[in-house]
Image 1 (cartoon, rainbow, N blue to C red):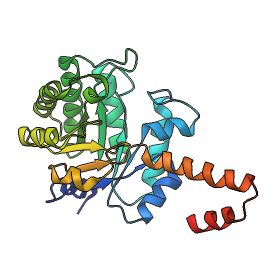
Image 2 (cartoon, rainbow, N blue to C red):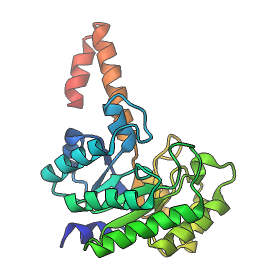
Image 3 (cartoon, rainbow, N blue to C red):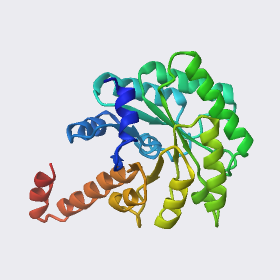
Image 4 (tube, rainbow, N blue to C red):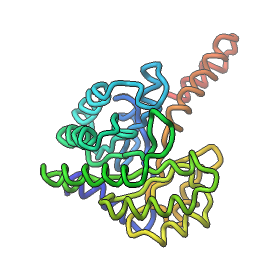
Length: 259
């Protein structure tokens, strides 16, 4: 069974699966060693590891280099967060995806927000981008690569459900294999969206939405951890190092227990 098949099958199980997100090789190896069936990258964590903010602040070449390293050291399927594609040009974006496909990734996330304006791209523009990605992958023998179309409606709009539904249906028709809606937390709206689409729904862990079982009960097939692991590692380090700085003996034991 190849990695593409494994990744697609994870989205077809009766219940959903948790997808952890890595930001470097060591975090990816920890995730793999934990028994995860697949993993994804987190753009937030990768940018932060370079001391930068999220939002395509690192060159695409940096992401490409990291992905190459991950592929060379991992045995489980890897999906890559390419944010909005590091361009607004459909051809350029499709070539970015193709370069990742050639390295061996099994999937990508592509967002519909413009990193320059911080607003949603037009629906036509985003559908054109998804169609171009799909066409390019198909023409180059990568038709199995999972295109996860992310919509940022819940992060930008005040009353986002109807807009989300319209975009999700359009992305499905454009060739997306799944729809990713970070910020979607209400179980009633999750169920309605699941019932309206023929492709799997992906949501993301949030501060007030961190129970995958609840999401799976609503029909979600993929629960992404996003930047939560990166944040957890950072907070854990700060907590224990602060205790060490205060000369509290239990801190050393805590660190050893964490390790």
